[in-house]
Image (cartoon, rainbow, N blue to C red; front, side, top):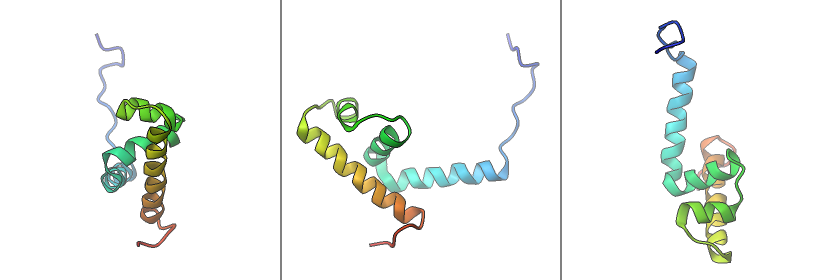
Length: 88
């Protein structure tokens, strides 16, 4: 049973819709793996070892290095997307 008074949720503002559209574009630019690694580090605060285990079911130095390379590449893409670096 609804406890919110049965009101419809507020629609997205133009600003919110534009921000969501931008996030979708960024996710597409990053690709699935880089997006998951970047979100894991930047949003969820996970370390590379944990991300390697969760994302690739791998552990050890090579797996962590692979995630580190993906994270570095993701930062490069984000810098270009946000205008902090030129396209290469």
